[in-house]
View 1 (cartoon, one colour):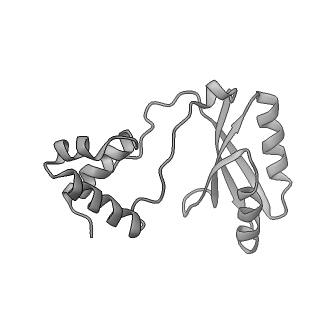
View 2 (spheres, rainbow, N blue to C red):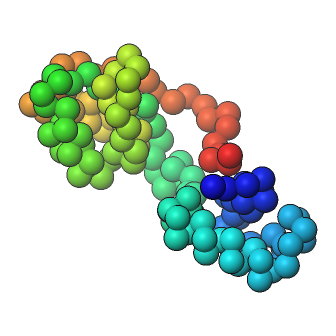
View 3 (cartoon, rainbow, N blue to C red):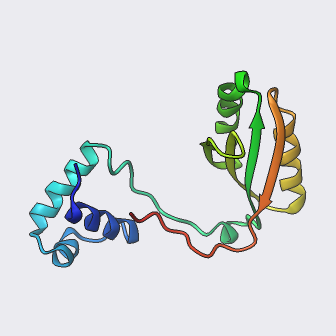
Length: 145
């Protein structure tokens, strides 16, 4: 079970995963050794799954981003999901209980490439319908708790 201090530690790491434990310690009112122990525990328990960087897709040439809803025949859900997981253009894939069975975050370098990707997805066996929602602006992008 995590407590308020763990949440504060996690939020500091989300802002900057390279922050020294001594700086986190000052923020949360613990010693750096206590912070280190808590972080190790959070890692062992799978609360912290990995450390990574966040890149700006535009700076890498990805000018088109789509949150794409995908409706799938129920018996094909897992095979379609497996196929999409292996596509480089799919950056995140989520199974939902909402309006769409799957939602894929897709990066493309042009409108033409994005159209081609959506067309390719629609041809996957078991895909019933593809619902692209092109991202026009990102107003908030953080994973803090």
